[in-house]
Length: 231
Image (cartoon, rainbow, N blue to C red; front, top):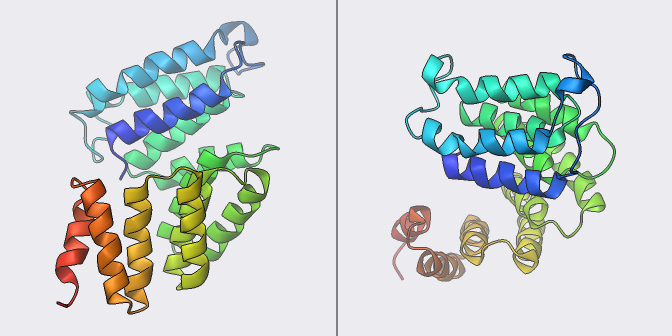
């Protein structure tokens, strides 16, 4: 499950990268109704923190918690070409444990020409949770060819390769992600997992300690440290 802040940060980031300053074309409710979709989406996203603070992932269908979803659905209908709205809808669908709905939006985005790295990252996560690692890996590799400087693509591919027990390539992709800007505490933690999986306990310990020192709120690093055999 994605938390509220993750939804706001990710959807807003994609919105910021996609602003065009113009209305989308077309729309089932008439082109004249698709006015300033970027501004409309900003309003919807701003309301997420307030609304989702009291609505958990099992709240689907509750009237008070369904407003954001309904607002996004309306904007998708009116402005079907507005990619940031599709992505925001996918993120929120994933957040409330409706991966099939999220996948539908993401596949529409990924069917378009060009690079769509953030959509690919979330789509790969859904595929991996379904056990379809080959698809996730293939899609990420394709997107990396289009956006080789996107840290999230390399970091997510590193995670897929770790799950596939491809330790060497996993470490390479994670290291690349770190060089491109992924947070060091997160990269150190995942590199620690790779080292631990290979039986390199001391390397794993050092990386977990680095991760925890950089972000004490990241409890998994502390948990992995505690679980390692003593020196």
